Length: 269
Image (tube, rainbow, N blue to C red; front, side, top):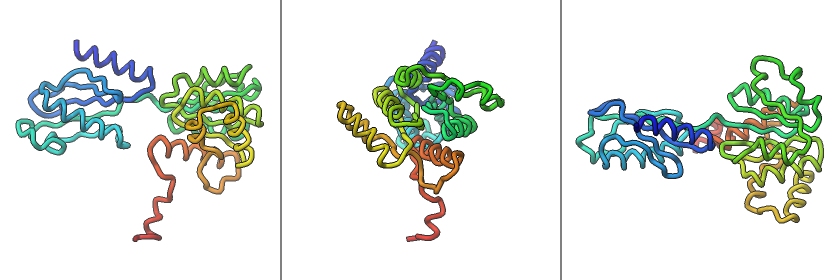
């Protein structure tokens, strides 16, 4: 019964777009015992001992804050006081849905971003109010066939539906004009996704942000908007701009700094 409940709750976690850790005893007296720890505190199952369960919960929270997808640890590594479990080990596995990227605008940058994001494992939804820009004929390769294409009659409605509850979802606004940017940003802020970025110059993006500020948009949410979108890599072509955008989205999701990995060689101190 516990196993079926864990499976049901894993499915709920994925449906909600939230996160959890599945802990499994892989060495010790009760090998195979499982324990699901959700990020908001709900716990399903047990490893057979209340003290062990408590220690695993604390370690699961630490694991969830890391970048690891799976990690095996001996009990002695994180709970040395539990001497009776010194020979036991736990496999920690991250449970979360595949990352989603909603792209507003299917011009050269948006289309390039959709293709690149799909290639690295994102569930991609590409939206445009011009049906010819989201024609399946333009995205016909095996990799591109996984991109959901939406011809929007109304930007706000289409974006709001695509974002859903916002959990685990990034939004890139790369439309062709102020009005479209404004409508898309309004919908994105109201849906509270994990990441929002908007293309354009500082002047253009500030105009849109100020307009929403005047409307009474939540200032905390406005400050979270990455605008102009993307990392500074000197991008010029649409493909390079798409790369800069996706790099920032991945960095935001994974907790990366976007700095050169070799910087320490130039500044060893």
